[in-house]
Image (cartoon, rainbow, N blue to C red; front, top):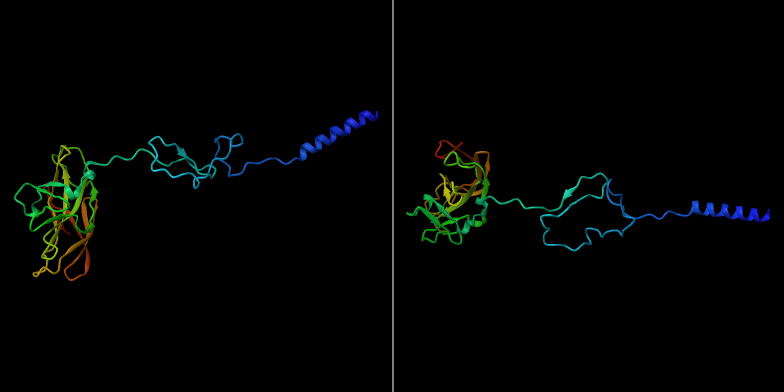
Length: 237
């Protein structure tokens, strides 16, 4: 009998000890439903401690936020291909039918941002940038729709009378040559050439062009233009 009591007491103590032993927990936030268990593998390093990489390949996997139920977000992926007009090297571009520059040739050839004449024509002067949008009528009409560009061009020497213009540029039907369409002409400079109207900023809104200009008196104003005919000529409104 005594032996039976001792065995029963030992079994009782073993059961109590097993129920009161602490449960080992794994640190970190709870993962989203369906994520693999972390108890069988060591915790992964945080994003801040991971080494930086230049770029991820096109097959980079989606990652999830630590917040439960957060949707998957792709950290990187295939880059959106650039349209042909965006591939233009504007400082060294060849633009056809740009009569504003006063050349007798059908094409204006820019090198390092200038056509190199004594009275130079400069493209995107002063750090100006092109604007891209689909806003010009395709020629011929059945040609595929492509993105167009609006660029700033300036005619004249920096220490003399100058005049600026916004030039819409369109790819031809082959997608290789760049053609100037009717331009938006800035105001004439002052008679002495010491004051010049400049385009401070410009953008395309639908099929219209809006710009902030600095006038000869130094004041600024917003101007808007729209096309008035199938040839693409512009009027201020």
